[in-house]
Amino acid sequence: MSILNRIRTILAGERYCSDEHLEGYHRIGQDVYVLEMELLDATEPHAKAIARAARCFQVIGDALLQDAREDDQKRSVASITHEQAEVLYGRIPDLMVAARQEAAFAGSARVSLPIRLGKRVESGHTGPLEHLIGLQRAADDLESLLSSKIQLARLEGDKFKESILLAEEARTRRRTGDSTVGRLTEGKKVPADLHEEAEESYWTALSSYLLVAQGLEDPSVLSHPARVSSVKSKLDSEDRWRITSESAKREIRRSGEWQIAERDLDEFWESHRLTQEEREYEATVENLLRSGDIVENGYWYCCPFQSCYRVVQGPVHVVGHTVKQHHAFVWEYGEDGARGHFIQVESFNRADSRQYCGDEDE
Image 1 (tube, rainbow, N blue to C red):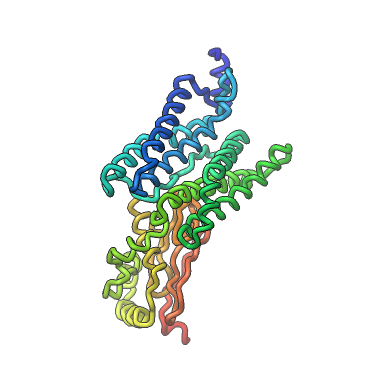
Image 2 (image 1 turned 90 degrees about the horizontal axis):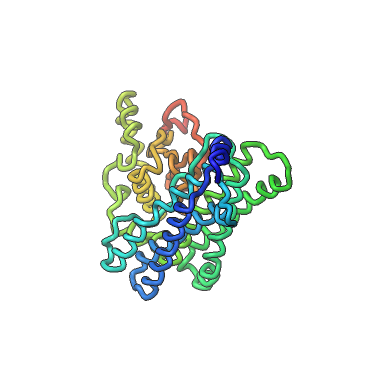
């Protein structure tokens, strides 16, 4: 490529993939294949799940850069596409190390399962159609990679329930993006917000497929029933303030409502019956807070005044629900012994005041 053409691609928001870059990515793909062959007879499911995650990152990266590999001219790709592929390829070496460590000694890998896709690279403006098509191709390739195992998993009943549910969600999200790509390729005008939604739909689909790939190798990484129940949860504490947000406690104290809140909390926990889903929710939230994927975003307006959360690196998966980046969620624990439920919205509105049991009778 001439210097003049290189300058043109930079000004156009494109990036030329050098032979060195492409060769390096090709070697990473070969290394992932060698790793999978090494682990064919491995008995540690966590090792296989980690290796499968590495393969997914490789498949997505390859799909994004397919245009740069198709002919001898090594066509340029959008800068955002190249940057996204680099991020994904960059995560593979650490995963390969972790998979080999886990295969050698169970529990030795320094990674937390399930492995998540992470934050989508954003350009700050509507991305090019070619980038959207690259994401579409990546979703198609991951679906093809996993399709045979998904079909076999359907025959296993509830064993792979979480993986199958996520696969259905991924397929639906992919189709949402496909409808927008179809209109764009036909030359139709599409509003910028729909274009952005299509990118988000594909990213959500890819995120779900990554989890599916791991769950098909080791169902426990998605369900965690033993882990959640074996670790003492703050829900099982005798503290009446066990899940009340710290900011709620400060405001309750400043407002002189401490005794009223204590009375309400005692009544609430006396009638509430904990569920495994609630324990899993709290455990998942703690992990997501530690990883920086979510932040506290206020608290719920009524007892037990638990924290609400906003996704800063997403999407994230919480007790069977997928929450988009920048969206908010909370577990509403129910009143008077009623069963709780999960709530997710684009954003929560601020309540005028806290609600106590006595307020409902007025």
